[in-house]
Length: 78
Image (cartoon, rainbow, N blue to C red; front, side, top):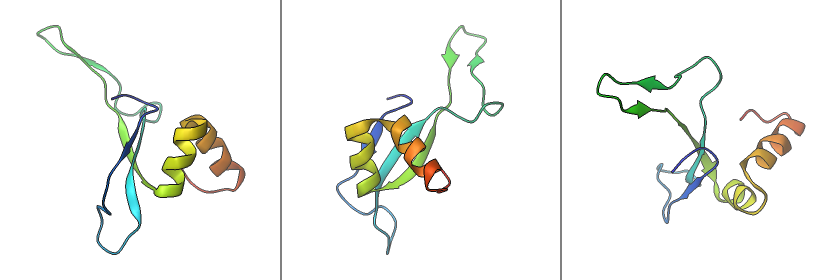
C-alpha cells in the first residue's frame, strides 16, 4: 500500500459516523520525511485520511489527485 491507494472497509469504523475507509497520501511537505535506518532499511511515512463512501468511490474512479482538486475547488479541507 502506498500514496494514492484507498482502503475500503465493510463497516463504519467510527461509531455513529458514515466513514467507510481511508485515502492514503504522502505526508505534507516538511513533515515525516523518509528515514534510512542504521541497518540499511528505508522507511517512508504515509497519512491515512478518513473518508466517506462517496469520496472513496470518486477516488477509485478518478484518482486521489482529482478528489483533492475537486475538494479544493469547493473549499473543502483535505
